[in-house]
Image (cartoon, rainbow, N blue to C red; front, side, top):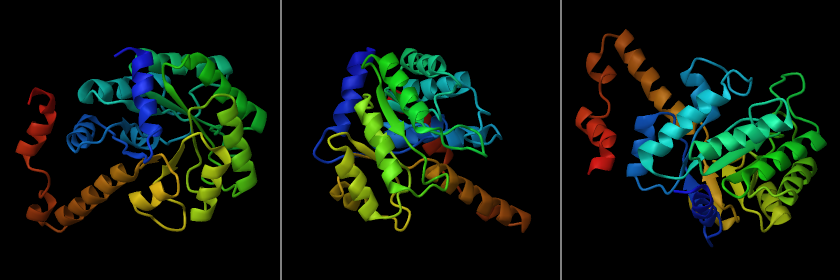
Length: 274
């Protein structure tokens, strides 16, 4: 599917009266599981990818090439639109961000996110002008062949400033971001305010506001157009693995080895052949 066609297909999901859920996969089997369940699009998770390599997220420890190869694999396996959770665009300069977007298009991605994070623990959020310029560079490079999400991590980085969050998201929309995103606003009122402030630009939400996990229908009622899960499914799976390890330590082989049936694994891995 050509880039422009894939862009239109993915963007159309955000323009429906009711939005959609876009869960995040972390490997081929999880991607096939989500595709088999009927989800219309899936995303990568920079956290899960970094963890699978034994590295930290958001610290420039995963390379652009590693993430592109990973995302391209998910696209080939599932045939679904894939949104890349590409941290700050993988690069120090605007040209680097543009290069990442062009690489994502070449690897068949349908969407890409660019955060205002810096990778510097002492100054984790980029200055406003720098953040906006990076989203603008991503939009220019996209040439409407990939959906660009502009994201501020204010709340994730301990900056609970709703006004600045809206200022950033509004600016991202004004320079052409197709979707905007601020993970974990404090409550439903703040999320509703964000949705209203940036309208008609679609808003992504990571699971829910920080104070309460809402249902999908409740989030859609607030005007959210896309619901992602970030690393939530991955850490859920790791939680099950940890429970199995605890059973193994106790000598309980039955509990430690009670997981997905291998026939189901084989069925998912050969899903496209059905």
